[in-house]
Length: 161
Image: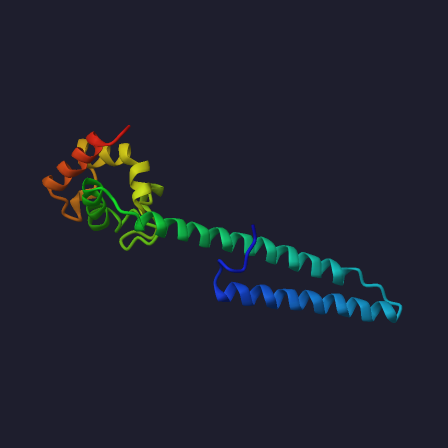
């Protein structure tokens, strides 16, 4: 579904500007038609502008919907053990594994841990790298303690596989 309610004001104004430009092109085509000149490129360009604006609007709506979904997932109450793991992930992992990573220019290895759903979906990888191999955080740059690793191990062992 395409909606202007879920996108930013800049996107709304951009769509309006493109549609006004498309309308102007169609009007110009009509004026030229009355003078005997049939420039079919003008309505084709207008149609392409409208089509591209609709595709852009659909993508912007999708991005906004994803952001809302992540906010809702982060807002839900977590069990105490999951809350403990989430605080460890925020402190020790998100510097590299986030869509807005501060240490790396992108989420390292494509593993983004921006929500607890992301953490739960990658629980096996996290357990293996953090607890079994103790390879993450790399070089223990964020100073993850043995107690934090044990918390992740307990969380992994008690969750439904």
